[in-house]
Amino acid sequence: VLSSLGGGLLQGDAIAVEARVGAGATLQLSTQASTKVYRGARGAAQSLDADVDAGGLLVVTPDAVTPFAGSRYEQKQTVTLAAGGSCVVVDWLGAGRSANGERWRSLACTSRTAYVTASRTLVDAVALPGAHAIDATDAWYDAVVSCVFAGPRAQETGEKALAVARRLAAMRGARVADGAQADVGPLAGAVLMGAGRVDDDLVVARFCAEAPEDAYRILKEALAPLEGALGEAPYAERLHGVGGFGRRARVPAEDAVVDVADASSTPMTPEHVLALSQLVDSALPTGAFAHSGGLEAAAQLNLLRADDEASLVRFLGQLRASHYSLYVPFFDAAYRGEDLAALDAALDALLAPAPPAQRASLAQGAGLRRVAGALGG
Image 1 (cartoon, rainbow, N blue to C red):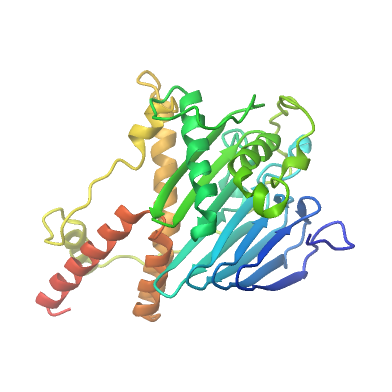
Image 2: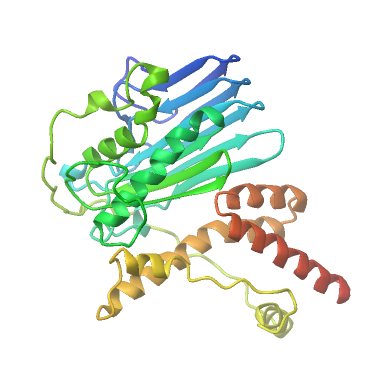
């Protein structure tokens, strides 16, 4: 259990953990309670650097990291798996002191976990915008959770996570196969979960929950196959009853708005406009990749309705923000002259959890390179 004598992280705190799991060994890292991050412009940080040998299993099952209003938090984790090594890693962010109307009011909160093997690197990253960019009345969830199941000893647990995702989709009215293979019990609020198999020995799952106690229920059910290796199911001791604790009031904090300086921009010349128009022209021979951005799934899960145009507008706005936060930093870094090979590898690792998008990015990038070469760029 990772614990400290303090009540949380203060600005300037930096906790670094190194771990090594030997061949055939099992290591579980957990926390005694949620990790609270207190107000402070300098921020706090945590890091984990773990190596897992062949046949080893690393299980990381923390409680939520909860950044309070005015806080900054950065988390970086690297798990290096030898051939035959396995890991189950949970990354959990909480909204803050919800009862006080302090929901998603940190100045900045980022978490990045890299999974490294001899043949590939996968990066699972979450970046929550500052308080100015989140409307607490729209952000109904109080828990954002990401789980990665990698290696042979994690596959049964990964399969259970897939079953939990199917069960939750079925509870929302979606047509799914084998939706009854998992039992999450009665839930206190809304839950959305997506899970997929990235490779034969790699499953990635993400979900958001309105009630933190529901996050515990889902994690307990998904991680139940680990009981044999650990002696008890992770998070089982966190559940003390059936049902929820009731829904909390959604009252945005009046003093939580953060001023943001106006961004400056460089005027575009006619040559810039022409070059940009050519780049975004559908006739540019780089190939195409069409997708709905999850529109069909959202409709099937009853997140969108034919008679509710506002829900579609919100969905498209969130989709735009998601694409912006992923790709624009790479455009900016490339424009500033950073190493293109390193940027390419970093983007490839971030897209690894979504193989179709990864393949499309590689194909269209290669096509754009051919066009640039033909034009003398």
